[in-house]
Length: 135
Length: 271
Image 1 (cartoon, each protein chain N blue to C red):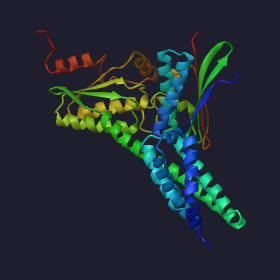
Image 2: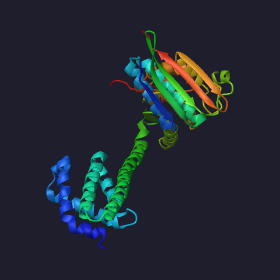
Image 3: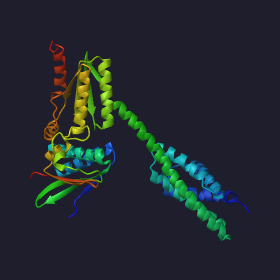
Image 4: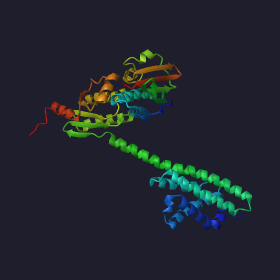
């Protein structure tokens, strides 16, 4: 069954807003509650900002998924940026290579239910995260 | 040999009439327009087309459409309707001239080739005209938005309220910081209340801007109070792990103002 999905190209500050609005709209139409909508929007805001800050450009794909009876929202953030050398380090609270707070990645993980990072140095990064709808 | 323009002039009346009929039957806005008004427009449009048939490169006709489409865009006419007018009238123009050159296949081919070039250039020009109008709208809105985006409201001596509305990106954060610090100086404010009721998402980037603003304000001897954190924003802030202990927070604008007055030994009391 084809599920709706939306691809947003991240090239500027404004695209971050577009990405989180797309995710929030989809979450809303799927019937996620206000708090989960805010969680999803905030997580995407973090991940999309990372794409913009570290890779310059990339894509965010938001899609509806289904596993058995439960429905969920999946977000895939991909870029062809520098990649992440030590994934365990970026997942630590407070670690940053820019002037940020160093809370974005671990924070986004806490906001979502599932969170996977694949990254090859020099080739790029792909982050897949999901939020399941509570029955 | 007569030029294409002369040939057009010889048949002008018939061609213009055909175009007017086609426009008035096919395009609703022209159907309700007085025939003389349509005639003026058609003549103004076809003349540069005929001139361009004799030119090496299309010039007069695309120029005409670039200007006209800019004006039409300002009037709010959709680009699709506008392109239809262009296509209908150029089609009739070419067909009529081909009939006029019935005994000269070389001229017919020439008219078709040239006509194609001119029409294509005019379509591009229509888009340019529309784009120019859109660009002007966008840049004027950007200015307008920047002006309304960070108003500073002095509510009492030494107390400022800064209501933040919409998404905060790095450019806006810079503007907010600037106007915040400026007005602390201008109003010699002791307390600045940042109201984030209207900010849909507080991520680490935005939180960082807010903390920086609070720190900078403190350097000027002013206290920042953050108000208007909604229930869902509070949850996401905690889960993100953002530490806002550096900023004083209050539930809403009212408690923020009460706190600010209290700092100065004042209070709002019933009479």
